[in-house]
Image (cartoon, rainbow, N blue to C red; front, top):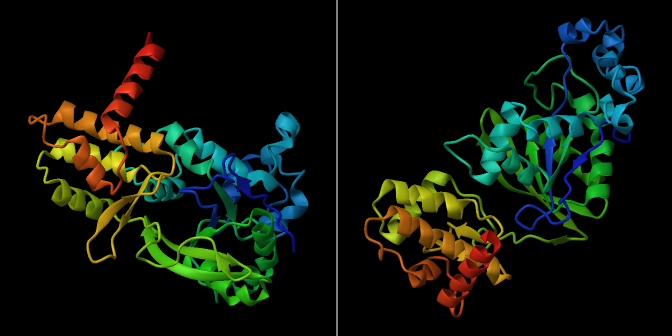
Length: 336
């Protein structure tokens, strides 16, 4: 069975999130009968109750008035696209919000529209079950085995088209369905990396190998790893020997969100932060931002030097002070 709900592929998917092509797999879409009734829907029992949603792509009364607008954008087969677009434009959705926080490390404040878009433009999203369910519900793989198995070929098609290197699977039921059917994958291998509780969801991190080769590092010592923000903050406080709460919070936030520059190695004998950005310009800007946070917020202006920051990031950029001076000069010229 080919997929019915088209995957939502971010504009920067090929660049990847943290440099890794990432697919997020949700569980299902649902349609409340009361909501459909407000639009006078006469297809609800067939579309939702009997799982025949793909037959009503052009007939759904909820979208019918807008079906011809935006080159057919508003149709139920575009539900993955419409949902993520709506979230990135500001609509509240707890599942997407919790997962965005989990992946980006943003804590303690509202995620901006730009931050939402920045993350979701770098990943692809797709809900596993290929028809509407009547409501949000929890179920296990044995509860819906026939449905989940029937939609595995659609999942295979998504993998063939997108060729992700890393998959985040929402819910144990979908994870069990994927691994129960994984023998059907040709030339692909899946391997568990981790399991996390994100809000009310259980999220499974899975690496994908093509022809036996994993493109991401599988060793916990060297693999790019998402550590908890609380651990990260405590680690920085100890490593930098800083006590000012506002300063450590500012620097923690800067570093924790520098996905394309650094990652934390937690499982080595000595936990550390490593800088893996090949383009040093980004690292120079990161060092400058940390130093500015120290200058603005620390009573002791010399508490953290450029060398301290470079040592902390396990990087060594030549002529760092001149590079940052040139960066400031370029900024002033743009401003003038």
